[in-house]
Image (cartoon, rainbow, N blue to C red):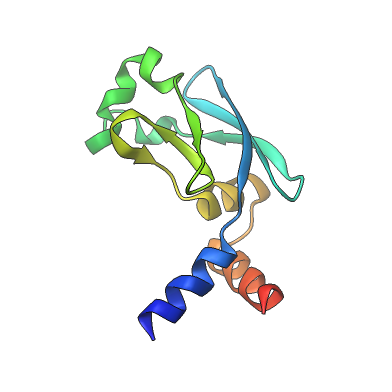
Length: 105
């Protein structure tokens, strides 16, 4: 059952297709469905693995992970694309995920 749920969740993931780092620890994102906008990540800076972002050069080295279709940084730092999508659209992440799972079936 767990494997089946994991497969369904993979189908549900929103895919990031473009990213640009901005000032003040923000990123501009475009998703595969055309949704685009800015996510403010400043609340993460200095916490846990995000301490690395205190070096702005590292933050600006953001890229799209071709395997997970989300934004990532060196040393395995990445962020959930569904959460980023929800932040940009203002929607609840669980509602978005459930809607996407229903559509994928």
